[in-house]
Image (tube, rainbow over the protein chains, first blue to last red):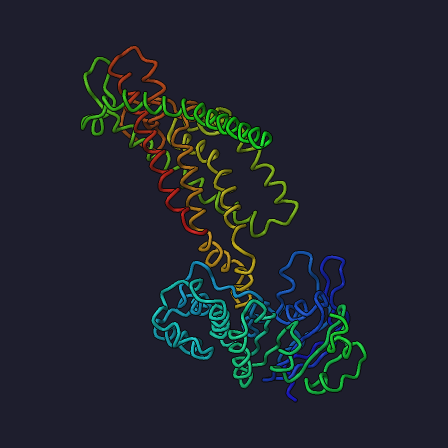
Length: 252
Length: 276
């Protein structure tokens, strides 16, 4: 197992509310790790701690270490902007930039990082849209607004937007919760494809989805990591009573 | 059935009162428009737009110098007021969770409530007394009126941009300031431009602060440290003059001023038709 993230004693707060309690976890490279648990258990907060998005919320605070590629991203002197360039994020609701075309939505990550060459931009936009299997659907409408696409297409556009800056990790915060079953199936297939080259961490409240797409599953409950291991083992042979109760629907 | 009829009567009565109130509110508006258009229209001819203020006793003349002066004054005021207002608005919306911003927001409210004549006197003491009656002083006074309007509309416009748009950009590894000036501002640009246009419409018609800080001027633009002519002051000065020719010009100036403000408002309306 090649460790991409080594999370050590991670704690997070919103104001005085302690939402993550002493999380220790090693996350494997180029695999899909699912984070499951009931609403409010800290799933989203956990992945937002991995690319330093947690701290942009006023009153939010973090302690502990997140070692990424051998460097603690919370060390003094680590630029959060550089961290986020390596670790992309997909949100619960598709959020393309409303006033931009499909092309610009994808290209902006490069444009704002100083890429001006039209040829490089064109190639990168095409490559990203192909990676998310959206190119054939939008290649004649690149000038249209990103908001004109369907929900599932918008979400794939957002994934393309994240991929264009060539991250190593994709954090996905319930990426299918606003989508219909067909769009969900497409995104799930895409997640499996992308896992060959990217480390993917996906938050989901849908246990079947975790079982379908992930190699590893972590179960969080009230901010604590209850159980973590290979998905098969967690689903078929959970060690912890709470995990079993959650997976069999005794609470949630 | 009786109860139903009673309800119908109440409904009719309420409708009647609402329409009556609407009518009462529109009477002054239309009577002003009617009066200004009827009287101002007769003042308008080619000469009116290309000639400056006539001297006393001269026949004809126009308001070309006042149009020039008003545009210069508004332009200068915008040059000061727009950047300051825009940046304050960005600060309040994007970084506005501190004690400082609560104080600034409160002061902006106070500032926008200060009578414009007071701002005129303030400008007179601060600027006119040291550099003289000048277009710079008038532009400063108008900028002070403009700033709270631009600040407030910019802040409101930026707050309408969903947080998810900012987070999407920040998660791409775009620095906060770049996120603000590209993604966030572009999402709200229509509403911001509208706010700026409305603030320009507001200051175009201001007379009291202009009179106190710059005074009246009958000639063409003669340098930034000198006064310029002004449409609103034309109305004020000419209308009170005993010369028939000047009184006609006052009506003409009023009409041009109303058309200018109307034009700006229409442009603002057209721009806000979109989503943001």
